[in-house]
Amino acid sequence: MPSPFDAPLLARAAALIKAYAARGEMLAAAESCTGGLVSALLTEIAGSSAVVDRGFVTYSNEAKQDMLGVSGALLIAHGAVSEPVARAMAEGALAHSRAHVTVAITGVAGPGGGSVEKPVGLVHFACARRGGETQAVERRFGDLGRAEVRRAALLCALDLLEARL
View: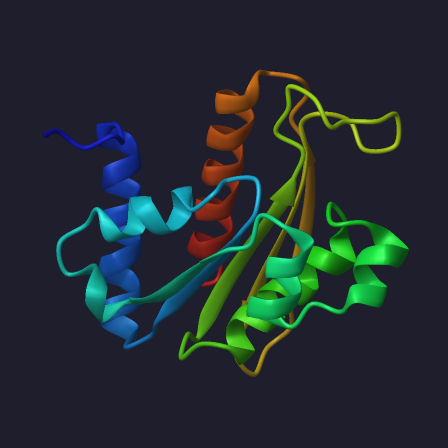
């Protein structure tokens, strides 16, 4: 069966795996709206077990709390799709893994679920490095369709992991 990912994505993933392996560093992903796409892409690469420690698919608020230690009060105060929650997810992934670098993604992929304040296509990202600062990014991709929002989020997550090298 061929890979579900196209050649450019596989090339980016292979380069990430090679670069992090050369540094002796491990990665983890905490994903909500992407449902594991980052982890799936990275583990499509032979040798990824030297780099990918684990992936957390935390689609529900309960999963974010149980698996990553995201505070229920934080979720109530800001909502799941927010910068504070993305940061907490990335930092929680660090705390619950052996990873040196983590990326977190939480957003509204659509087609429903959006609001005026948090429209379809809004995605918050955070990238954390052990012993370093957590970076957060907000993207408003627009209502591109569910698959395209998820793909755009995957690409942004790769950008963040590349920037942390």
